[in-house]
Amino acid sequence: MSNMIHRPWVVGGAWFATVAVIIGWSISADARWSTSGLLLLVGMTPAIVALLIGAGAPAPTVAEILHAVHAKNGR
Image (tube, rainbow, N blue to C red; front, side):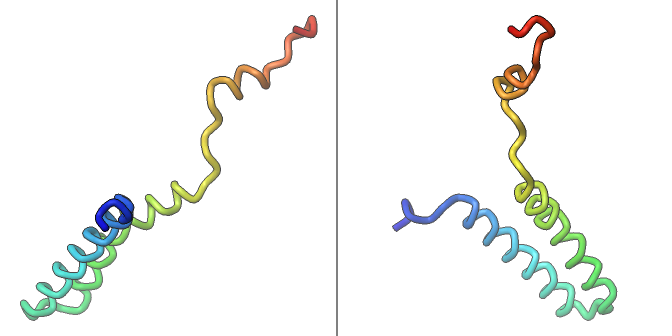
């Protein structure tokens, strides 16, 4: 079964579980809601940035860049 689980899902699940534990600890330590909210924001920001970067178009390869160049003499 472990062969069927993809690594990004495991890493993402561990990331979110860690953030949940930190937020739960913050709330159980009687921290203010603003502190818990800030911890949540700081914990989720890297995941959101990674999703935004990953959702973009893939970078062109070197071959695609070199092929797109048109010489003046038609080569």
